[in-house]
Amino acid sequence: MKTRLNGPFVVPVRDIVRHPGEMREHQFSVTLKEQWGEGIVSYEAGSEIDVDVRLESVHEGILASGTVDAEYKGVCGRCLKDIAEPVEVEFQELFAYPGDEETDFEVQDDHVDLETLVREAAVLSLPFQPVCQPDCPGLDPNTGERLAESTGVEPDAPIDPRWSALQQITDQGNAADRRGPENTEES
Ligand SMILES: [Zn+2]
Image (cartoon, rainbow, N blue to C red; front, side, top):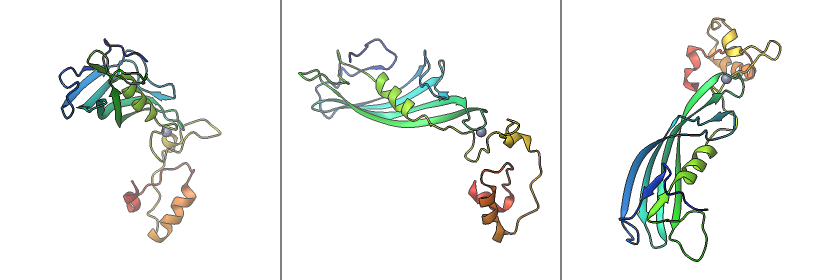
């Protein structure tokens, strides 16, 4: 894989190349020109990816480690409501100096291109089953309406705490959001 030296994730490392022990830190933001991710949630074109990277010169090359901050958007996998969630994910990879062996990540013309690294870290952190909230009750199988929003019922009278654990079990998969003041420690 050849590095594109003009991409938005290209970082110069000229001043630390072949100087083991030297280290530089960079922070930058990239506005995506294309969508990242193919699922029901993704990083949309136009959204911002924040990269915080530490580049360390080692004998074999440049070790890049850092974090990606981004926000994915899409729909809840249960109720189809629009969702947007921040993501922070770490990455680390060695960019080797060009040599006999072809490697996926290489220092090229005193630059490293973090795009593949950042993209893979961000896309792999997308949830397979995104939900708007952990206890999203989903859609009513009969009407297709959102259960969380269609039930305008007031919370029931306080439940005896001795029964609340049992109540939570029987409520699993049930429609109403019964989270009352007596069991807020769950939230
Ligand atoms: Zn939902």
